[in-house]
Length: 344
Image 1 (cartoon, rainbow, N blue to C red):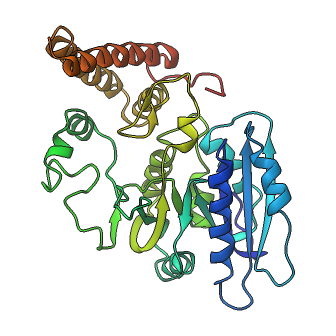
Image 2 (image 1 turned 120 degrees about the horizontal axis):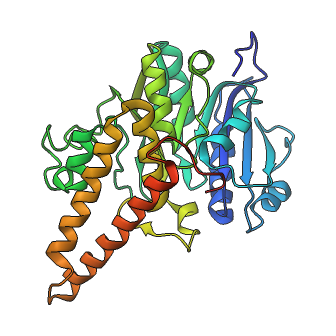
């Protein structure tokens, strides 16, 4: 991303779409409404990257949103991709051509709350040390979602996979990965913030580059935040920048793949990205990450598969599937050394 001396827009809001037409419509309505609250004389562009959707998402955008309505502060543009590029590479398409002073990434199943866009811009202006800013993510019913997180390490992944982080969420030790011990009302510098909402500083992107397309889905924002921090910038969480996020809507459409309802993730893709991330940033620890997860699944099989209780037998069979997927992910990425051909 090249830093330009002047900008055509105050902000560029980028939305990647994959088979979420109805939610995408609601998302764009929230964006356009929020852009109308920009200060006088400030305008915005909205870039929708359609990742080869099959539900006519692109047609809906073209028919209902594209263009610049007289008196409106937002112009909506559609970028069509003939293949599913994944999250990071699709965002890169828009980031490479956006003309806003601040690029803002928003999931297609996420919706702005009133005033949050202006607040995010104001915080970035006040805090030049911040390279990436994140929002308070909430569900439809207002429930808090993890919005300020620590980087993946063997220890952090261990307490998540064993369930200790969920069981002792208020502990500063076991609740560390998602900072569940901390008040969500307190702003803070953190390791990484979820890609459902990100506001980016162009100068930081100029230094570190855009998303690594090695990651088709999952871990791409973790990798970007790590590189931004290594370049000397902060990653920051602001609790009064509020975004409703449903989560996992595009992934749910992939009915041929095992989906985790607990984490709203496609398990095979998550495992691939885990190995790719560990190999890139932790080298030899990649094998430890595999042994850890595979060992936990094996223990779960031994404990539950042959139980007389139907629920426990089901957990055991689920662990058998997960262990097989983990081994598949290891083979396909050659231990985190290569990314499988896209689209995954």
